[in-house]
Image (cartoon, rainbow, N blue to C red):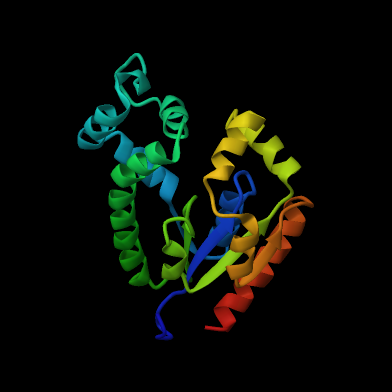
Length: 205
């Protein structure tokens, strides 16, 4: 990634509900291309081969009335234990990461794109922070994060804590980041920080 012609790959780190996707969207407004791992994973979940593998591990109770995977039921079943999360990850992660690699290669060749942003929920947990040129940590207080996920994802405090305990600590994520943005004071303050961080990343290649 050392060549000047290469676009920087920016990874976003942060806790559940910290606003990682909001940060990614603001980078997109500045000319970056965002690779959204959740969207890729959702498409892969709908594939017949993937569905069969998941049902063989978790059973038909994770399907909805139309026979499709119910993502909430699947998440609840997976977060029952570290072993079950690992089994789900082993099914989902390889095809998702293959698609991300293909998209990085594709976007590197497109001159209008200034940078590539990875909006990958478990970026550090799967070791993909090493694939990035720059890492941006989104700092956000737990109370705010919890309030957001109650509204956006309909998760309660217990589910929030269960999911968070399977992730690498926020201190560790903050420590390896090249830049930190504070998402405790509203969107306009966040946008100013993102503009500044993006400018520094693009000027220091």
